[in-house]
Image (cartoon, rainbow, N blue to C red; front, top):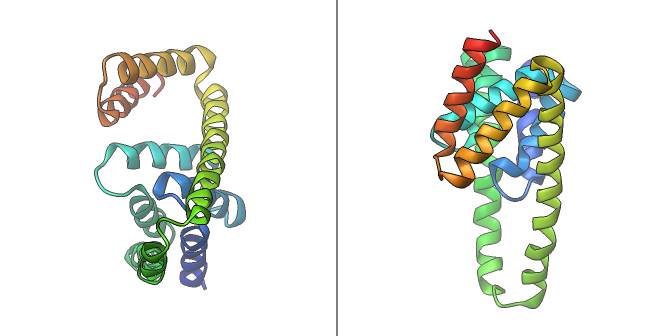
Length: 176
């Protein structure tokens, strides 16, 4: 039964999500934290932060970690399989259709409407992480990390992996 739940928890967000890994993270969080309760919001945020620091697609890393945490190697395999299969099937099925109609105004409008929805979902997820950070680490540490990260990313064009590593080190030194 746990394998079926793992499959559904990662298959459904990946089959209905549009826009890649970052866009489906809120959907995965809803399943992992909200529906099945395999992690709390703080654990999910920490897993996401660690996953962002590593190379490769975020959704497969999250699936592998959560699957392993819930049901060992078999769970990891099922969760990664459930993450990859929808994209592969949809890509094969839709590629020909979209390619044929790539100049259609309807296809272009569809893409334009999807982007704001993804942006709102990401903003909601970010707000949730901010509130968790304030609750767990306090407002001073959270704002310090957020401001330092924004400056490093925007002003100095630091790679996000280094920013995440620096935040992890800061947390380990001052919050651990």
